[in-house]
Image 1 (cartoon, rainbow, N blue to C red):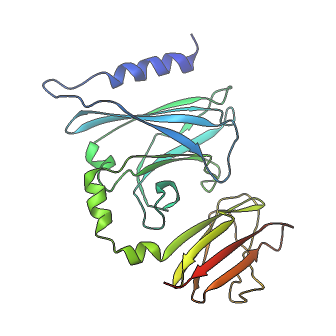
Image 2 (image 1 turned 180 degrees about the vertical axis):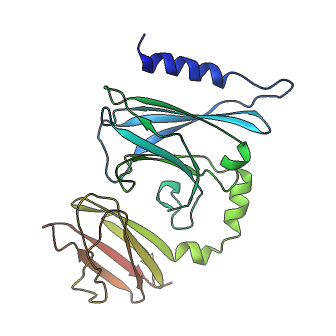
Length: 247
């Protein structure tokens, strides 16, 4: 039996344990999805089980990553930048132990933590990063929001949520390639690629970022209705549009 299968078996057994007198909750599973700089074969699952009021186990089961490569993974709180947890740019709340994939690009990682640290407004999603460059995020798993999270999010005004959007800068593409916002919205471009990019526009000369490197951001507030094209001057054909509507 391979080390990967042995470890998976041990972790599966750990998920079935509950402390004496505690009622264990059903195991919750959340699939990982590919992000802006994907490894096309990457996939996986986050499994979370609460063992007691003060104990939980989170397990990452990952496949198709770069073989024999160090990675790190983090729980993030839900940010306000997007309705998609994986695009919301929330802060890190918990870190999984650093790990290295095996020769087949597989890894299984265990994290024990107080459930309060990964519930409510915390732990809204899990990102898997390459250890060498945290801007490279091949996989993300969205954790379902609890009632507490929904209540906290509802206290944020609809206006503040609607007036913030994000665009990911991958290598040779912007995501999404077409975005519609209302006048007054601030759009933030987040560099998730590996090479230098910029954000420029002939339609709106005010859109003119400096050179952006992995992990860096650039923001612009759109005030005038219309459809505007922007581009990266370093890569031919790398362009996208933003349509601004009246409120």
